[in-house]
Length: 77
Figure (cartoon, rainbow, N blue to C red):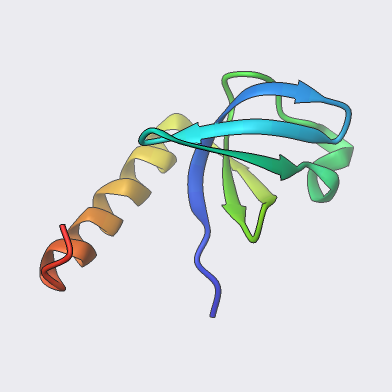
């Protein structure tokens, strides 16, 4: 099972993007979203250095809330 993390795009160059979330940055591929490329400021779900789908800011926020709850339950927060 893979976990996708919501990140916000900070720059785009072709099919590559820089994304940020909670102080972490990643270079990711936008290849899977090439038919409707996201832009700077958009949120995407990232799995294994690839954007797998675009999400709204609200969906990204809700995903982080769920991840925080899981980490708290596991005593990892």
